Amino acid sequence: MTVSDARLAQIAHRFAELEARLASGTLEGDAFVAASRDYAELEPVARVAAQVASMREELASLQKLDDPDPDMRALAAEEIARIREELPEAERKLAIAMLPRDSADQRPAMLEIRAGTGGDEAALFAADLYRMYERYAAEQGWKVEMISANANDIGGFKEVVANIAGTGVFAKLKFESGVHRVQRVPVTESGGRIHTSAATVAVLPEPSEVDVQIEDKDLKIDIYRASGAGGQHVNTTDSAVRITHLPSGLVVICQDERSQHKNKAKAMQVLRARLYEKMRDEAQGAEAEARKAMVGSGDRSERIRTYNFPQGRVTDHRINLTLHRLPEVLEGPGLGELIDALIAEDEAKRLAAMDG
Image (spheres, rainbow, N blue to C red):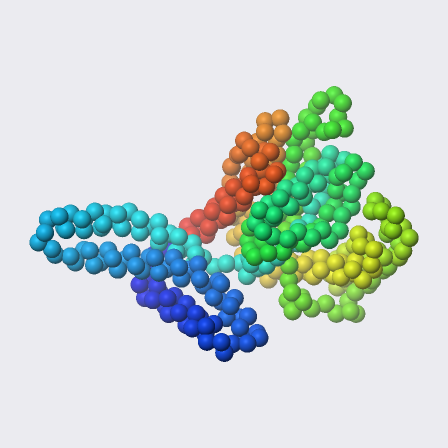
């Protein structure tokens, strides 16, 4: 996809206009927030567009050069060759930067991990995945807040829900949704046999209250005494909250906080994210099928990755990428390589679809 010179000029003009508006000091409130958001979205496009425009102008100027000095002509020929070699990659980067973005890409995200097949071993694996995302988030400068957790007696999670706040969280984590499979000898296995267990991951963009408005009349809220691991306070007060959204049938339970009000606030946060994802799925329709044809639908029922401990490898089945650095992946840095590869594959396929 080649971007015309006229389109490059439009991008430069729009970016300069936004810069001038923000620098004027006349914008306030919602107008300033909207202009800042537009600037942040356009800035990476404008930066690459300016580079492409500069390279094209330099190439045109050099091609017109008619200098009698043979040394100058030779130097110009070298520069022409260099620009012709580098320009296609710059134009490709621009095309990628101009691809339509998911409107939720820059949002924080709700991470939900649930133990699947495998009993206690699956719960231990769910805990491993949670720590992996915690470490990756720390590398990205994001903040992780656990919303709720259902732990077992040996340090695993039957279910854990967390909020991950920061810039571009959903854009980087959205392809993590699906079934993650582990192959290893469980700590509970005395015979040394390798077991296969699984955990499901769901990554949901977090909406604002404006995006999802929930009526009080649509909620059934139950307050009860919390149970399970969590300290002496757990069984002494009616602090656990179960919220049922009547129109959709969605149910959210939160009991980790001592305060009923804090549990209710966290439960509403999770409910809002699940309703927002439901709304997105219904609205996208055919677009969801296009996503499925790229690097995966994000459906938590789809097996996406295998973590094989005996061989020390991690395989992402959607892009047929295997890394023989399993410990590094679980520690966070290796996960970044997988995520970057998934994003690159998604961009390449969307580019090819647009060119086609």
